[in-house]
Image (tube, rainbow, N blue to C red; front, side, top):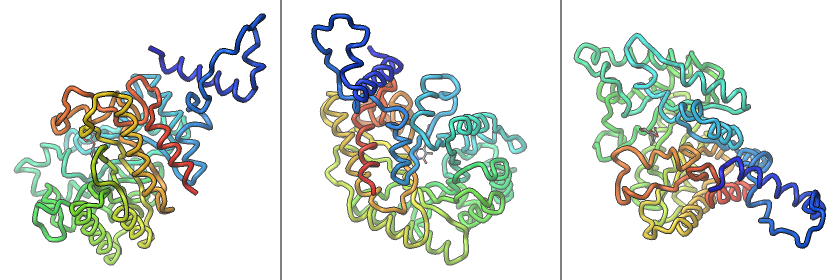
Length: 386
Ligand code: XIL
């Protein structure tokens, strides 16, 4: 099987041939009998000016990816891929409470600090994910002894973490996934540990504290389940917009809204007016929109044929981005990792669902870091943007 380096080398050669014409093909070939077949340069050449990063930039967007930081540290080919394709990176887990704060009096910034240096070296931005989430709540804060001090720990945590990175992150997901209508709370708020210990004003508190500690990062509210033209998504969109309008009325600092964009392939319902209207409503509130965690869950695709699956997945990227990128408020597009080798959809109990023995092909690059149809869908979607 062709390696990534061979693939890129072949791509560069194909591009050079395309640029130089057949003359180059004949070089070093004393008696050519025929011109060897060459695949179109556009198919192979995905680096430099043909990367997702470069195409996004030409259309007023920044493209990037979430990464598990040790993969960047341990795998030079993956690090090269990230540097080549991304204008922004975000750690998938290393800035969440459990990873960052193993004990009340101890923070571990080593991995995120590494990623920040890596981003600098590659002239990439970095964003932070996340200061407040219902998951990744450390056991130590839930003890009978510490629980009564949750509010104090919360403010102190956000202050310390935001100050550590002040002026260096493009944005922070300050609060992640605060809406869950089935919990039956006012405003559709999720009954998270933070909600129960601090009260519904934990959201305002998080944003005010973050702004005071880092006035430069764009403060983002991030959530999922808003992408479809169905009742569930419509209800979640309405509740999120109500939450954000309330925050603005109360003078809470807020700059952007993250749409996670974990979408599904082969669903009858597609993307349309619900999503478009949601993005437009956010734009009219003076906020930016970030597609923060895009990937395509392909569990519902019936065929096992990878060629057919890749085509359906790619079409899902096209359909989604056609709607989302039509609005100029959308400034960032990030996939939740860049390679199928590391997609979260292949690990963790909640995602071993319908096809436990069929690894997902959800991302723009395959396990061996070769671009798939999804890569070209994303790149073409950027190019269609004005
Ligand atoms: C996921 C990570 O990718 C996993 O590695 C981890 O085990 C659980 O969290 N929405 C989010 C992200 O906002 O934080 C989640 O990340 C994926 C869903």
